[in-house]
Image 1 (cartoon, rainbow, N blue to C red):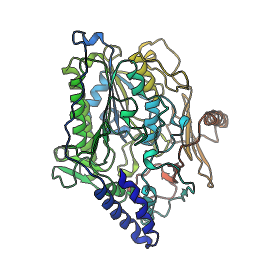
Image 2: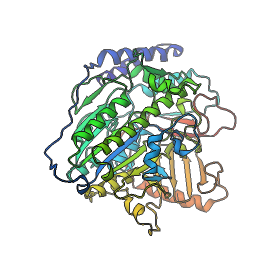
Image 3: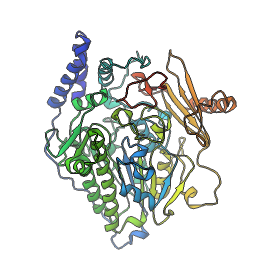
Image 4: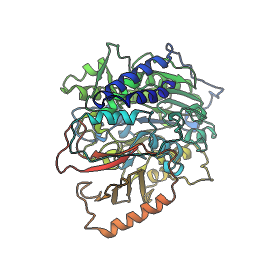
Length: 551
C-alpha cells in the first residue's frame, strides 16, 4: 500500500493543470503509481492449521462452529427469495433461508462498508469509538469530484468540502485495538478463528485481522477480481461513475496471508476465497472454529468469469449481466460452503449467518437492486441499510421461519458470543443483543431493540418499531427531515407535518443517543447530495429528492 502516499504528489502537480484535463491525468498518474510501487509476488499456497484436536469427540457434542458470510454492497432485490427478479437467481442463498431463519427487518450498521464492519466486529455502534466514516485513500474524493465536475448534472445540489485535515494516514484510519473484536472474544472461548477476504478496519499498528483475534487471515488487498488481460474475465466499466473510474486506475489484484508478502490469487477472486474457505473447513473439522468469509462481491469494479457471464445470455444490458454473473458466483460460494460443512459432518451443529455490509449502490447504474425500498448505499433510506439477514443452525433454530422485529449487525456479535459460550466485555456498553432467545422462545413478546440509530456526519436516522426519522443536516445548508410510518407505506409519504409529536419523540431519542457517542477519529472529506430515487446512470430531474451524505 506504499504507493498510496504518492497520490498526494499527483494532486500537487495537478493544481496548475486545466480542470478539463486534471481528472484524466490524475487517473493515469495514480495507475502508474499503483503498478510501479506494488510488488506482487506469484501465487502462494495456503496451508490452514489443523492443530491438536480430539477426533474421538462427536461433532454434535462439540461447541457449535460459527460461519459468518458477509457480502459487499448486495442489494435487497439481488436475492431471488426477496421478489420476482429476472436478473439474479440465488438458489443456494434461498435454500439457506428455507432451512433457517429470515430476518425480514435486518439492518446493516451503516450505509457504508467500513463503519458497518466495525459495528459487526465490536458489537457496538461504531460511533461510540469514533469510527464514523469509511477510510478512503488520499486523492480519491478530490479526483472523483473532479470527474463529477466534468459530468453534466445541473440540478445536483451543492456539496460541502471539509477544511479540516486528518492527522491520520489512510492505513491508520482503523478500529482502535482497544475494541474487543468478535474474533478475540470467541478465541478466548477456545475457538480457532479464521478470516478470508475484506477487512477495511485498519492496515497497520496492530489493526490487521491477524492482530485483532484471527489466528489465520487471508486478506484482500487489491480491488480487482481477475487480471485485466485475462480472456476468461469479463468486465464492465461505468463511465458515468467517478468512483468506478478511480478504482480501475488505483486498484490491483493481490492478497496476503497473516501479514506476509503480497501475492496474486490464482483465479477469479470470489471462487478463490471459496476454495480457501472449503480448505479451512476441512482443516478444522475436528475442533470448534469461527470462519469470517468476507466476500468483496458484488462491489465494483464489475468483473465476472466468462462462464458465469455466458450462462446469463438472456440479460441484454452488459453491466447488468456482469453484475448478475458476479452474484451467481457469490451464490455458488454459499452453496459450496454449505456442501463442505455437510461433507465433513458439521452442518447440523454450525451456526451460519449470511448478510451484507450495506444496501446496493446507486453508482452501478441498475435502478432496481434495492426494490421495493428507496435509496442506496450512502443514504439512510431503507435501500441503504435494509439488508439480507439470514441464520441457519439446524440443531437449534426452526427451519423456514421468519423473524419480523428489527435486528442489527451488532446483534451478530452478541449472538455469536452466546453461541460460543464467550463472556461479553463488562467494561463498556455492548449494543448488540443475543437473538437466540427471540428465535427459540415463541412466548417472548418484547423485541430486541427499542430504537436503532444511524449516523454519518450530515446523515442521521432513528427508527423504533413503527416510525423512522431521517435527517439530512449539512453544515451551512438547509436541514431536511422525513418521518415515515414503516408499517403502512414505507418511505413514500413524509408524515413530518401530520405527526409532530412522533417526530419530537424520535428527535429526542436521537439527541440522547448522539450525546453518548464520541467525536470522529478523522474528519469527513466531503458532504455530497445523493439522489434518493435515481441511480447514477440517470439524469436528475426537477422535483427529485436529495439527502446529504458525509464521508
